[in-house]
Image (tube, rainbow, N blue to C red; front, side):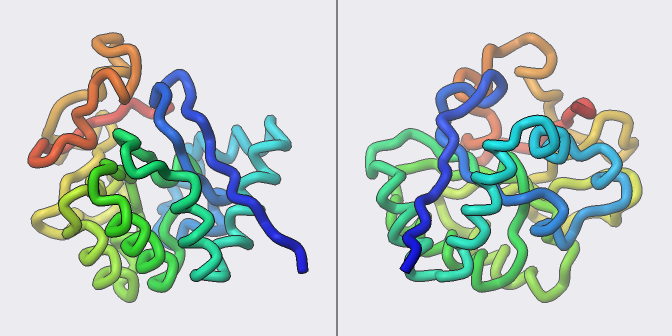
Length: 200
């Protein structure tokens, strides 16, 4: 039997030293709009960096075995880690996968998990995403653009700059006011509001 290892990123210039987990873009993005597909930054990474493409694909295959996925990811997340970013690339692609992340987040109650998702627009994923979003240590944003309807009431929203519906602060890292997501911490602060991103 082939034993798959999880590919967990060590962070990057934008997020700082925050471990990240990703999946292949598009293939795992059931809520992606046409606009999102046209502006997908993750797709560029996958084209230019073969190691990203292979690692994300390996993560997807691993995620199909829920028990192994949960135990493998928990091995990668120390209980005293400050925060963890879910999906630099990819998204919540089905309910079982959402529930796997719920189990992971529950098992690491002192770690702050944060993610941006367009899967909120997929009706059958709504209940599982609501359960994940309700966890005290999870900051889950409804990512949207001008071509999408308004997200469900009560969600924190990640807007694209130029959307007349946009409310919240402009991303401090993108605007040179913070070195990274880790130094800003706004997106994974409990009780904080919406955020507005430039296209990148």
